[in-house]
Length: 338
Ligand code: NCD
Image 1 (spheres, protein in one colour):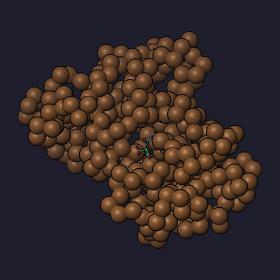
Image 2 (tube, protein in one colour; image 1 turned 90 degrees about the vertical axis):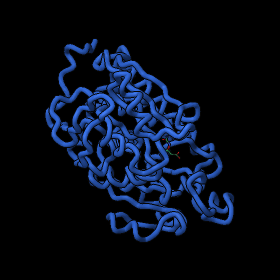
Image 3 (cartoon, protein in one colour; image 1 turned 180 degrees about the horizontal axis):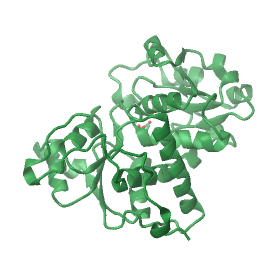
């Protein structure tokens, strides 16, 4: 059985105490995280499920937006590593009494916690906290900006199926404009050498995205035959100011993945989705539950990815990138921007 004693240290090449986004990481660093996640996946699926590498540490799930998978997955990952987990609920907190997010975080931190897992509707929220508190910060989604662990679990799922990322063609389909999953996927996949196609209505994906070295297509039917992986994104109605297409039915007709489209795709095509899925909109139930779909494998891989992120961030002794000074009581740390 794997024990904390014979597990080994965090690789010396890993120098981050937070995980804020994939834009900040190199291809080698992303690969380190994926490789560690593979090891943790073995512990989760074949081993004792628990390895107390973070025993004595405390993580706080600080979620200001709804979540099913990410919150549960981070909480489970921390517990599998032996850490204690505190759940913070924004709706019942003193935020409603006017407290700022930094004050809230500093007060929670004063209870001697080690890490904050943060989801917030504002882009940059996790980075703001990383600059103002002493704890390790893990971005669980900051508005439409980044969702690094979602992209890592997507990429791990793809790598496990194809044995590689470089040279694959991955299409992100749907609401690119409002999707943090899309942005983190683009950074991660491009760094690892994949070809990325963004596909959706022109109101949700503009040609400007091509500046990131990706292809933009407005026709799902035209790209079907040359894609290895379809990542089907949810339409983020909650972030949209105006409705970007006439009706959901029309969207599903043009961009929904169904059995007819799947039959025109490559025979070994992989279907993934970050969830929650809207059956009948971006994906039909037969495709979501069919043999090409790895949607539930993604959820399993998510726990392993988050174990890797938490362990490498919290237990690393080699830090040089984002070494914000330890907060001293209410004075807090100096704001050092990375
Ligand atoms: C994604 C998110 O919250 O950004 N979901 C997730 O984390 N599993 C995508 C979405 O909400 O559509």
